[in-house]
Image 1 (spheres, rainbow, N blue to C red):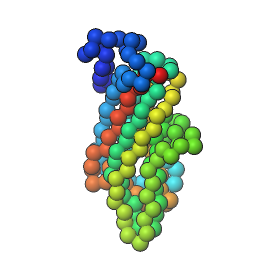
Image 2: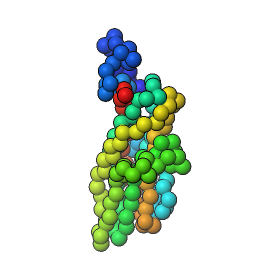
Image 3: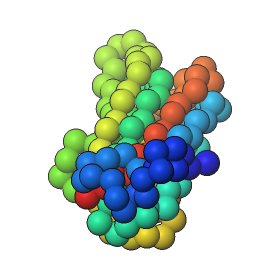
Image 4: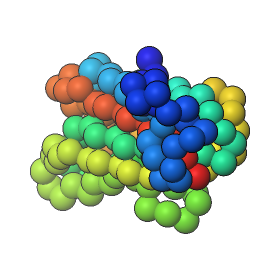
Length: 155
């Protein structure tokens, strides 16, 4: 469900100043997902937003608890679309969480923040994906709640 802030103020989104948050969408997912895949798979966490303008920016904020088995690496990143879509980390920005474990298993929190420019007014889905170096890794470890917040920023 989208929260349209302009409805409470009586100011239409078009009348709000540049940099204003004009819409917020929040999504959660609490089921542990495990993989040994060396290709990105979905964590189950995604959110959809429909920008009001093609010039709007979308601020993506993700929080999750992850686990990497001993002697393994893992990466988390946000995709525009499904994990077969646009990997936002490929834009050259640091858009992913990563963990490298030594001789012990690592359990840690990750946070991802990214400002996207989808250039559309169509419904746009963002998906959190993850992959492993071949060892067992978990997303939403111990069924903790992962969150994704999308904020439309007026450009």
